[in-house]
Image (cartoon, rainbow, N blue to C red; front, side, top):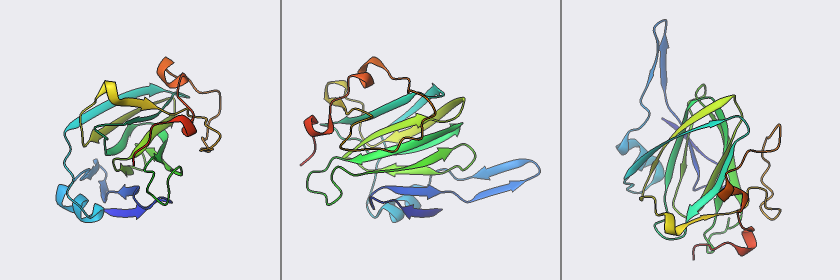
Length: 181
């Protein structure tokens, strides 16, 4: 598996080795030993999620202030622009974001460690994401930062006004968000 670090070095883009022929393709989407070697520490996943959205849906920026979740994200249908925002106050990249296009075609995956907010915008007609998390969903600790926060200035590649959930439409400003020490 090929790996590269994004502008925030803790965010890792993973590209599997794909074996294709006239029958189709095969790739190993996850290997615990190889993943931990790339990340440099033991990681245990406890939950898998599957999300389906239509074009121009923007989900995020979500995080849990307690029970912080690391996420391994991949797209199995369509294409999204996937983003992580560093919320670790002690980090030199605090308040910065990194992102990349993930798609069923490019098969890239994104590792987002605990301490980051996560969001994505759907670029294709529909998209389905699969993601593993390192901690369980904890609704009472879930938080949301406004997707269009001017301090973060995320360069979302949107072709239209995004479709938001009620919760996401009420996201708070980055300067008012609870963050990690």
